[in-house]
Image (cartoon, rainbow, N blue to C red; front, side, top):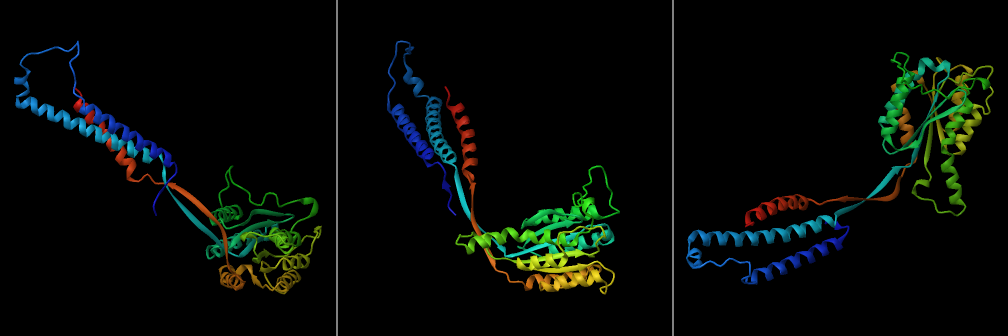
Length: 352
């Protein structure tokens, strides 16, 4: 790719300056010096000029002046080229798989023994994905968005690693330790509000749903506003305290997720699947077209969840082109520095 000049007028000005230097040097070289009043007149200088050492000194001076002129012209030209900022402009087309995944984790007291393994399952699941947008939401009394839907996998891995450390009861907790569950508890409304937590997770898709409504109303959505496949991976035991005052039941939240086009996959932390909370959770997931797996199975559930994710419709969404410009002076800058050094040496040599 050929570089383009950001300020070509600077190069043109440098070429003009180089031309002026050439013209002046030619005029000075062609002009014969004439005697001046302050010139000391010496007799019989012909004998001096006939000396081989004198002739050699004159030749060295002439060649030195010529080399200095050439170096000066080259330095001016290269300086103008570098000042004109040669650069390469690259256009990159971003793209994403049009699938969104919300990792939804119950961090209530009854989940303490299971959460570390579940977060590790989340991390392993994410390591097998590429291009999907991912979000992490924690909930107890209220949902807390750790990070919204994003394709920044460095951020996703960092936050999941922080969650693993925070939820590990054996990890060292210094004064700078972060409690990732802070903000999920409101004792006045109870604990383990699974319905409200699932609703908070489902609402991560509401922004795209609003954009879809704008499209249906005649607006022209951008690439990021296209229809996307959605999945909520809900990890909970669905154990709610008697004092809970949740706004939504698990079934109502699952219906909301389904209305937004999302499939709910449940990781059931109950020891058995024949309890009422486990059956209610399984029914809610099944109503959205999803499935339920034991949270204790950990890594065994990952291939099944991945298969569900990959079974969802996916198409590459082309993002807006991103243009990047890079300065590429290349060897011109190195050559200019070398010329400046040579010019200084040559000028020192030809000085009388």
